[in-house]
Amino acid sequence: MGNKVNVVTLCLCVWTLLFCFVSCVPNEGLRRIGLRKVKLGPKDFLGLKGGEALLSKNILEGTEEFDVVVLKNYLDAQYYGEISIGTPPQKFTVIFDTGSSNTWVPSVKCYFSLACLFHAKYKSSQSSTYKPNGTSAAIQYGTGAISGFFSYDNIKVGDIVVKDQEFIETTREPGITFVAAKFDGLLGLGFQEISVGNSVPIWYNMVEQGLVKDPVFSFWLNRNPKEEEGGEIVFGGVDPDHFKGKHTYVPVTRKGYWQFDMGDVLIDGKPTGYCAKDCSAIADSGTSLLAGPKTVVTMINQAIGASGVYSQECRNVVDQYGQTILQLLLAETQPKKICSQIGLCTFDGTRGVSMGIQSVVPQTDRISSGGHQDATCSVCEMAIVWMQSQLKQNQTEEQIINYANALCDKVPNPMGQSSVDCAKIPSMPNVSFTIGGKTFDLAPQEYILKVGEGPQAQCISGFTALDVPPPRGPLWILGDIFMGRYHTVFDYGKLRVGFAEAA
Image 1 (cartoon, helix red, strand yellow):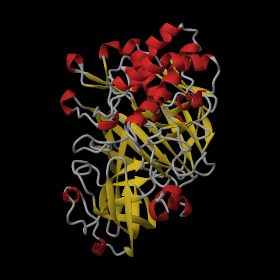
Image 2 (tube, helix red, strand yellow; image 1 turned 90 degrees about the horizontal axis):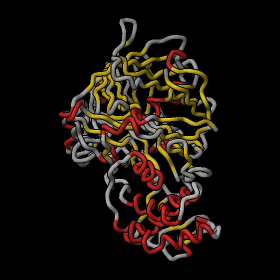
Image 3 (spheres, one colour; image 1 turned 90 degrees about the vertical axis):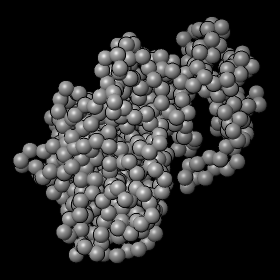
Image 4 (cartoon, helix red, strand yellow; image 1 turned 60 degrees about the horizontal axis):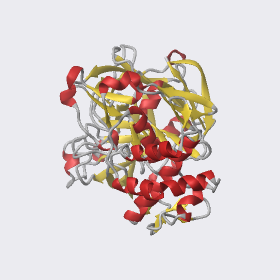
């Protein structure tokens, strides 16, 4: 996923490490993957960008009646599995990622990338079912890049054999992102719309070739650290033993990612107001954390006592323009026009836009920005949301300005990681997401990542900042922290995503 928050510090990609066995068994067209969990200690902690931290090692294991597939789980959330390609089968460890759509593994023709030296490589000459393609392919992820060429071969996932599946043989994996990763490649479960080369995703062919009962797959991620079983992925349906009540379904609004409309975010039951009308969300098994607009993540950091990075730019804006912004809000000036009205942003007809923006590239959703002016515009827009939330609570002018200044100290670390005091977890508020008109709560024990035990324990906020501009944003990415709390159904047949309390 090009805008994915899973980014790595030094030599470890966000998707990395940890062992598991997966099992898949046919049960009226269902294919299952089961897991058990092994906890790690503080010495295993790795600080990563995007707020990622290494918390536990999960091992997926099946019973005698299951076909065993090796899986890996990162951060109590990232799930990996073993697939095989070709005849006879060549084994690879891959990420099951609903945030991308291509399948790729290293090629034996990958000669000059260090990452390829440490991972299994596909040898087309040794497979009797291999079919050449040769079309070039390149993918840029948030954590790194790969390039190579397309080929065809049979791919086995558990006991499912997908025939003539198109995949990428990578010949370049530059940089150090993939060097230390324990996975070889990736298996995308997103839509064809974001597939590089318009390649047909493997999930599409599972359905087309009649290998699953229904065009549905579901995730159950066990978050109970005392239980060995770590979770289950079911291809072809859902397991009623793994959720309570009924699923709340929302339609996919934009094919590509599993994207849907989302309502407001609440902190301790109080609306933030930021996503009351126009936020979207993505259910993404390839992201460990919860990524959202910096404005709201800063408010969450304030509420949970997370330490971010002091921003003098933020305080300057609040000190110089805070009273003016507040007066304009009280005068019922359209909030989206305020920052341009006071000269910190331009206005594009719908929202404030940084005067430093040089160009927008729709193909990659990347923005070339103008540094200082971008930061000032961004801070102004955040301050408006902060002040609006306090006005709704009938706070005084002094209280509102002080609140905005306090939030400046909680602006998320540019690397994405924010630490919290482990001793204060019981007193932290719930953070809730509104989906399909229903509120989905996350308790602090669920959104705080704890590494180790006792006085050596380290606690990391599960929220990381990601600002995606319109029209795709504002956007939340609901990763495995959320999916661990709520059983998630990806309904390809009816183009919808469903959430129910996990059992």
